[in-house]
Length: 168
Image 1 (cartoon, rainbow, N blue to C red):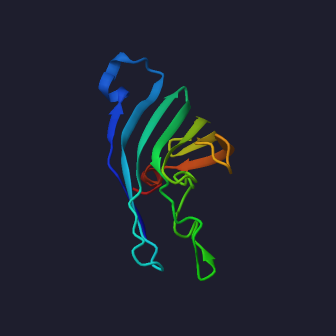
Image 2 (cartoon, rainbow, N blue to C red):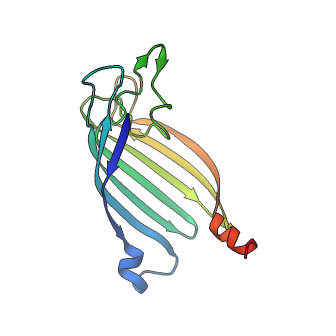
Image 3 (tube, rainbow, N blue to C red):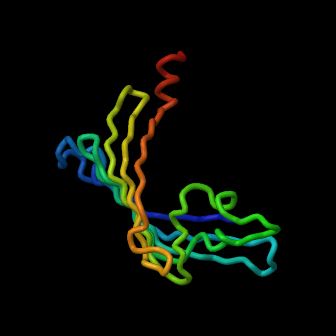
């Protein structure tokens, strides 16, 4: 079992300052809060753990270019990632998405994900996003502080706008 609860406070400068920021700011916000996990290995009795940490997200976008940063400080939220049960290794079947919270360290550590992107609007219902994503974390014997980077190309469809245009 793997569950996470994330309670946060969000700050949105565009709404807070309304007309005081220049018009080219498209996004300027952040949030901060604790995240607590509940995990249990069903093959092992008394294996329930409650790892926790703090997440801070910051987003800045202007002229369709921006940065999105997620900083995590806390315990490894994916402690069962490498556990083997009946010859099957826990991994992506238990932990969906990126392995962002697998810090590879027992105890507290940090992990940082920085995305630099360009996202022009192709149509009212379609955005193109080209990104460079950088991963950093506590240095370990297996990994340096710089963990690696990715190049990402995405198409983002807004189905509500698309359906509103063609279905009346």
